[in-house]
Image (cartoon, rainbow over all chains, first blue to last red; front, top):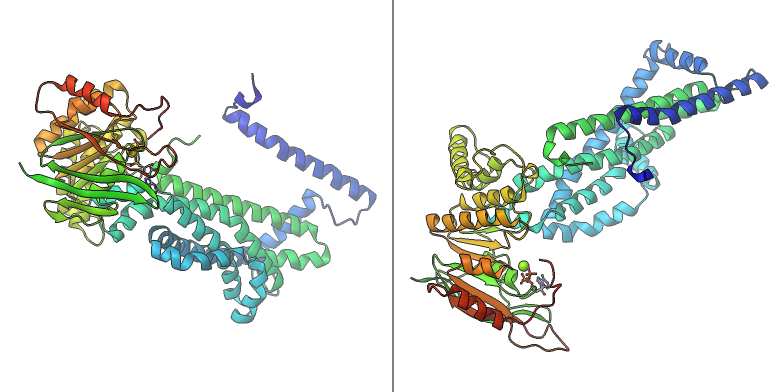
Length: 271
Length: 264
Ligand SMILES: Nc1ncnc2c1ncn2[C@@H]1O[C@H](COP(=O)(O)OP(=O)(O)OP(=O)(O)O)[C@@H](O)[C@H]1O
Ligand SMILES: [Mg+2]
């Protein structure tokens, strides 16, 4: 049988996916043990036990200085920034992307500007944001929003312009004016794509969040990682990275679930 | 009978490419006009003029004696070969859309009693096209024939005077095609429609039409094929019995098409 035609069943797929992960964990365990064998004070590859101890301390104990549970405070602060930034980007993608895609005049007027903004590396304007908006929450949220919005807006506009012209014409022959056409034909078909493009943007959004937190913050997942880096605390950094991945995976799964629930028609006939 | 549509020396050009040239003809109310011709002859362009999707470069198109605005209006319905229905709406929602746009200017959605009434109207229309048992499924769950039935119901719920069909059965199996031909003929009579049907099937054109119009180029410039446009080179009313003779006569009028003459 050809390799391209071999399909696994559900159990087979789970197993196939688990093997590399387990292998990676084993390799880590072996290497960590070897390093600690050579030097019992080695901090680079801590044991799983050391990592869970350190992580649990941050997850359960209240920090004496702040009076808060560190992990909880970091997670809430980061998710809040991420959530607000992503929400602003999503909303502007919905409004501008659809206006750009539907109304030729808007496309002519705003297309070039958004094109220019899109090619600026967002991290390069981080200093501008810090100067203009201060070191507080606003500049971090702004970086996330500015970082991902241009891609989302352009993706949305491209998706909307690619709707078959037959649909747009048909709606008009059914008596729809521009507003009704947008509301009933364009927006509903744009929403599943918007969720899709948000899912794709969450990766960059985390990058911008952690960059901003690393540079100027006093709470947050990115802040914590860069803070403990000074003490080479890999026993905190590694679990934090795993925790971030877990949050990212959960967000993605939630968005996917939302899309499937709300827009079943958009998920018909997928492979 | 009076002319519902009249074309007076109509030209359509895209830059230096002439697509239609000096088209002059009248279309009677309640006629069933079949449009045939080689690929690229401008049949869809002709429909787009009637639809108001675009205006002529020169000449005038009159609807009931007044000049047609280059905008689509609900008095002219359309069914394309593909993409005529909205994939995100169920059959019922697809048909209700036309009613909701007219009755709910701001939200384009109806509620309560008004919704119930629109729903019943839409359901009746779906029943008329044979989709009575498929009200709540999405187009992706329908066969090609069912989707075209839905597209027809969606257009007819607005009670258009003119129905434009651009190769509506082009992608259907022969058996389904026959059913669809019978359906369209019945609806044409029942609703007193004027139908313009583009088809590549000459038999279909003669079977359904009360008039067959063939578009083709009168003149050819071998060095610059875009120089001349197509026009109605053959036009026959079929209230006579000799449909087969007319069909043969038409074959002699059309320029021979290369075997692989293109897709739609
Ligand atoms: N917007 C446009 N710009 C430039 N050329 C166009 C445009 N629309 C149509 N044409 C050209 O006009 C010609 C006629 O097109 P049209 O689609 O009307 O042909 P048709 O008779 O419907 O062909 P088919 O049977 O393949 O559907 C084609 O050569 C096409 O390339
Ligand atoms: Mg065509």
